[in-house]
Length: 335
Image 1: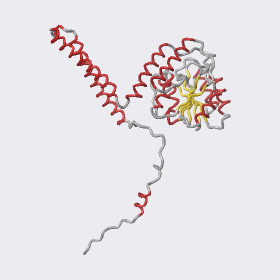
Image 2 (image 1 turned 120 degrees about the vertical axis):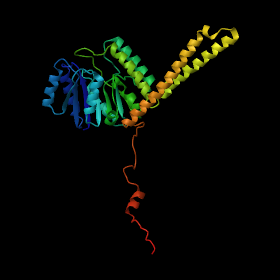
Image 3 (image 1 turned 90 degrees about the vertical axis):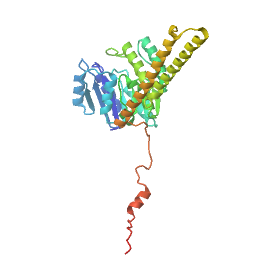
Image 4 (image 1 turned 60 degrees about the horizontal axis):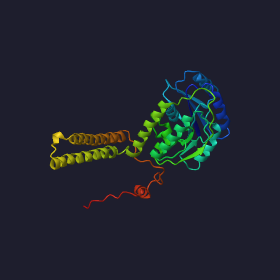
């Protein structure tokens, strides 16, 4: 399979048929084998019924029906897990992404990139607050993760399948796939794509989702810097706190000998004890995190490195071949 188009849906019954027709018009002109995977994320309207009728009519349409609304990231993950294409392209089901941009993404991917991210350069969202929040979020994500994209929130991206197959998604992490893939050394670029105003239904984004994105960003930063050595973070914080505790302790001694202020009358000693306890706790947390990380990687066979390609590993060593074909000379005992 050449292409897998992954489309998560939640209450988008009016958009399904126009989207399907647009996809078919583009995909059948590419001369590539393809599948369209719709994921019904617990819709309460007739979205699933429309998808079932589409699947009966067209065998290239595949439908995944989730038991309830799990969210966009979970729906995308379900589509990625079932996709069979060498190239996987997710997109929104609300008609704001345009199928005509699919050939552009594929062409850029074939230049040697692992991920091509869409950039809604001319966004058609009506809410000014949403545009401002998006720009601030993109700037923060770029600064913290090191993957500087103009539009990390655009669902329309093209991935090589091997990049997605090794990535597990939680929370609202689908927007951070390029950052997670960057940890494996993926080559990433960005191209402008078309963005349409919403025609049907209502947006599912809100302030609650923004908070989730912020928390997920903290998770990505931790995974990027400390996923294999958490002691560096916890131990470093513990060492700094313990150093302040020592300084506070010296302050109490100085006031005792310089001004005659006894320790039990000096509140600084409480600060010293408190910081010392915190410092020790952080160091112990770091050691426990080290044990958890090692158990996680070793029990599941998780690699701590990712190889792009190898050469000559599939060809037996000539010396080994020669040794296999040489007759074994058995020493004869003298009589």
